[in-house]
Length: 192
Image 1 (cartoon, rainbow, N blue to C red):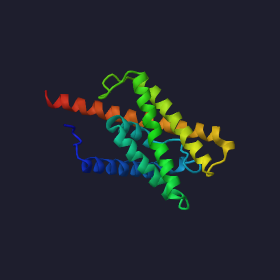
Image 2: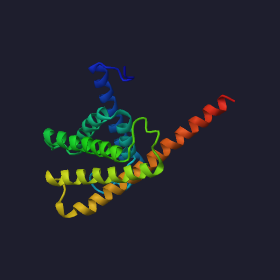
Image 3: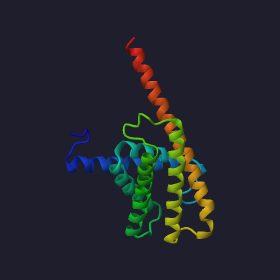
Image 4: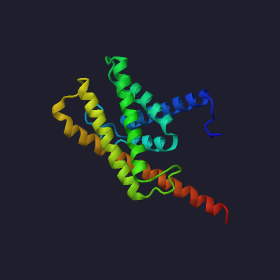
């Protein structure tokens, strides 16, 4: 039996909790931590939630993809009040599923499996860069398709978004690895 439980209620609660966590992380990143680094709508030089997104996908798989989709749709609706709900849902679906599919494919190519014990620095770099580029392209193409962004800035805006996500993922994953090392060190000290 899974630690997450097998009931649909447990899965639904987990998905809603993950969606709330990611939504809060995006708002904290954009409104408090790096409010000055936002370059127009949905473009940041530093986007820490990209690292959280990767971590959630690594830990919770398809459940995280659904949660991220819900979260992104909610964020888009809160930022663009005139957007039709169906369009926000489509943007959310692409925003949550594209990195999930990219991560799943990269995991197979790099021969990585849960619990990610074989994950090394090179793998983190490859995954961060590829997922950052996938997310940036999906976001910018999606916003251009629905007319929110112009096609003529697609490459420039995609590069900015990719850089923000890659930097955010490196910083977040670095912090997570540092916390893991500190916890392990604390555990070793308490056993001595």
